[in-house]
Image 1 (cartoon, rainbow, N blue to C red):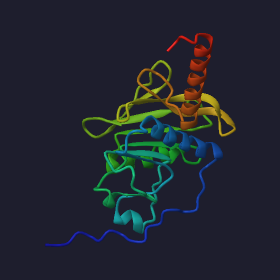
Image 2: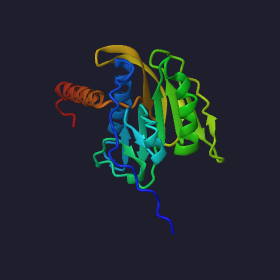
Image 3: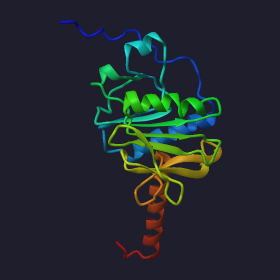
Image 4: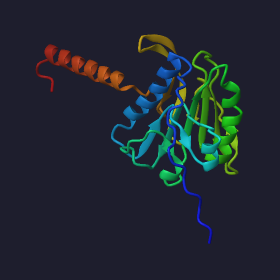
Length: 222
């Protein structure tokens, strides 16, 4: 009986290429950190970004790097340290959700070659693309019963439902890391913004201050 091929060794985890812009970097960080905040009590998922996903020996030989800007894998050990996502070291698991932050130089690949790989090879359940400099650029696809991508229909706000995560993806205008822009953000099922850790802390502080003011005005309140 023939033996399966030995998994490649000495994988490259950094090709030295920076993200397109600072806005792309912040946008990626927003998605990762807000999901981690939303699921702060969970340790059964991994959220990464701008990390290579290795899935075949041929891919390694061809140096055909695939580094989604944001991806999530469910039902895995979230505490494990990883330089990249190596499928054969993860029980054959591929990303369940991917978001690519497009630019004019990547839009064709993000909606063509990459989309085809995520559909046929990765079988990624939900795939989204968004250009941080183009407010109306959000698109999404979900695998159907035949394992083919079907476009996700936006709601009245233009948001797209990510069934795998149980969140909406939509835009939000504001200032993050000193840059004001229209950011791609998560919203819960009721339409509430999924907060970043610092936003959640600020909200807690405001609620505490309001409670203290209430107690000061009415010392008998408990």
